[in-house]
Length: 416
Image (tube, rainbow, N blue to C red; front, side, top):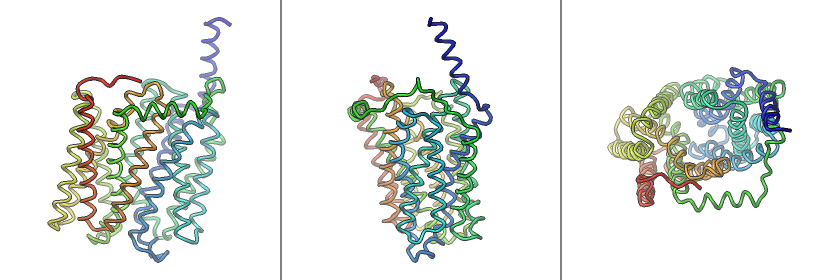
């Protein structure tokens, strides 16, 4: 077969995998992202009722959020390589089914310990939806079309804090189990959609065998690239700030400041809006100033925000003054996440797929460690909470100083 015939065959194969229209693919990926986001945000108003049901403290129920993040971290290492080896359809079906079964079992869970195990399982399967769903888009679209769909999916993640807690508050009239039932309905819709409509977008000839030797070489290449390790640590510290907030926000706002569930939903939505604004501004800032200026400035802004939070909490200021610091924190995090992730992957073009899994796993696992520690030790106290966030953001600046010594700001990092 000549080169022209091969190209035609390849084009035919690529066309045959594009069964879904762009609008349907966009909606499908949006639903996957929404399920991942709702697994966290929709649960926050129910944490106090959950504590009452199981007879435990509000602080301990924060582990429901933390264990989800831990499962999400571990799952990324499994589903990314698996979908490259066996295709996209089966991992997506398994992820949707596993997610749905986990949340349905939560409706009848007899103990808090088993609930935490199921939340870990839910997080692991949710990571399969995220990782494999993103790969699905890369298989079927390219260039601007792919960028538009991925941008929409990211906006779903960012917009979820605007309305997910309000949905959670509405569901509480049927008890703290109701959010899990809602997630189960979403999982059922997704599984049915995938079964009826989705082909496998990765044909056998494009699949790769992920043998242990190959994975070990890729992992070693990552760990020996110091800038990538440094920015993964920065991602973990910054993500730890966010995870500590997600776990502790309901307890701080409702227990310490005495706000209602409805007021908490409004305050949480304001934080989401600040993150949306930061994300929308990030593109123009990167275009004008460049990654090596925007990222250090964003890390400095996060440290300033947590310093302000610590100051107003020590002065026992009003909720409004405290929440202004939270909004600034959300804005800076929106600038940090995409840019630190890009900086971590920049020198690893030769192993981009697996490197992305490693960066995701490392940063999420660190966030679980930092966020859980701060949430459990602060126990809803704004002063201890703000101190923990300040320590994380300050450590970020120390890691940034190390990156500067490696010469990151002076020249482009050599590619592996």
